[in-house]
Image (cartoon, rainbow, N blue to C red; front, top):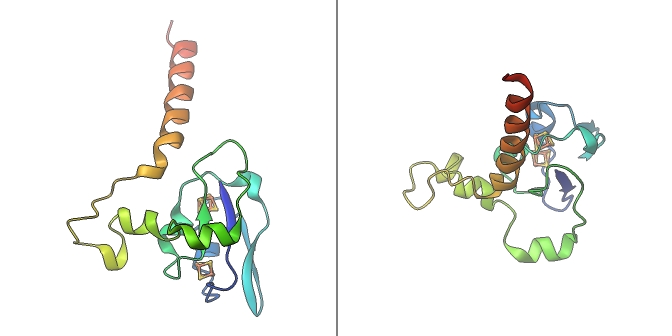
Length: 124
Ligand code: SF4
Ligand code: SF4
């Protein structure tokens, strides 16, 4: 789930606003966008992928918000790592980073569980 827009890194390009499939962000004239509808986040990581400034953080828990500390996050090296490890943009073609999707594991597990429940309910 989207947790943070880091103002000091944001260059106000509003790409995250445009690519978010569930309209989670609101753009703000003269400032970074705000997370206006966090509960609508699908944890798809698209905003992280498109944020060249590495100013966004999406936590892997797709069910509930994860408390995060901005300073700790900035020091952690996590910002931009999903973009890098997905071989996105400037990382494209770098054989060290080949779309590992490492932060999607929790999302995939939840999707699998939902899929299994649904198929048990629908298959006689
Ligand atoms: S994509 Fe990144 S830099 Fe652009 S507005 Fe969103 S948070 Fe800011
Ligand atoms: S993770 Fe996906 S759904 Fe959530 S805010 Fe980013 S683009 Fe929108």
